[in-house]
Image (cartoon, rainbow, N blue to C red; front, side, top):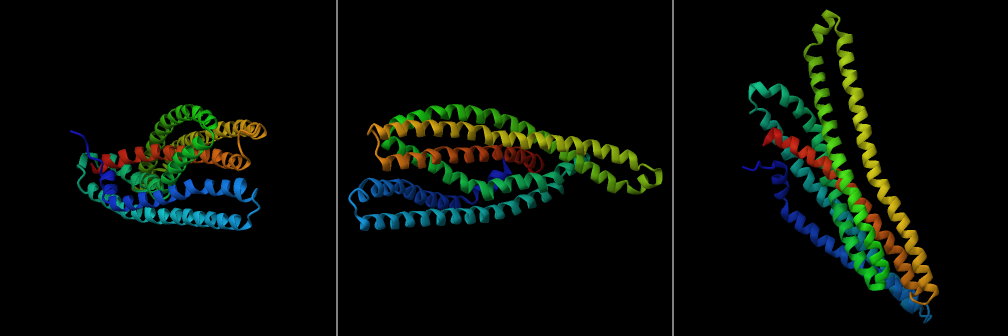
Amino acid sequence: MKKKNVVLEQIRKYKWGYLFGIILVAMDAIVTYIYPQLITNILDKAVPAKNPGAVISNVAYMAICQLVSITVALALSYLFCKMSNGFIVKIKLLLIQAMFQVDGKEIEKKSNLFMTSMNADVNNIEMLSSRMLSDLLIQIVTVIITAVILIQINPVIFWFMLLIYPILIAIQIFFNKKIMSQSRKVMGKMDVGNGLIKEFVSNLYEYLALNGRNYYIDKFCRNETSLRNEILKQNMLMAYNRSVPQLISTTTFLIVLAISGVMVINGQVQFGELTVIIMYTQRMFNPLSSIMLVIGQFQKAKVSMDRINEIVG
């Protein structure tokens, strides 16, 4: 029998909110698709025709597109934060209720897990659900729309960039496995640390009476030092997860810039199209770096979900 996931059950209760979020993202997709057409209208049509009215009207439309995009981003941030606040409170309530039902033999083990879950685990889920998911939706749509725009302007550039994606995906898979494994180690060390703090509070008089201060401090410092080393490893994995794809995407952008520049010289690409290629090549890879960062955070959140389900499920 498959164990229920109480975290996902709470999230599913906000399905109408997510549907509204999808509608907002669709609005952003439309303006993202229109924006480069306005740029080419200005540089390849209005400017050569020396038509200031056309320049002003296209700039006005671009301003409207930017306003819509900013409004959508703000609305999504508010929506996801509002929904996150709702189910995070319910998850904490479920954790507290579950502790009243724990068998006496397991109370010591689960109390350490409970303390970490109420703070670190819930915070991992909250960070993903309130701040990162809204950005993730916009970034995914941006990548898709950008790919459509680039293949319309110059398929050669698009296919060249597409060849880089398997490399980035392979890197992401590698780091995801490492991040998930490291997150479990970090959370385990936090459980031990919480247990030591409870031990200190419970046995404070005994430590004073028996001069056990050095015994406790040595034990606590060993675990705390080990925990900080594991956190350092986790943070560096997250940093590598950002830096390596950025290095690849920057190199690819420079190559695309050189290729498209030669195409302009040879008359294969117009100046306005070159501007769009430069803008949207960056927009093809920058969101991908953000998506990878969110996926890395998702690995940490998944570990936290498993730990919460261990208490509540």
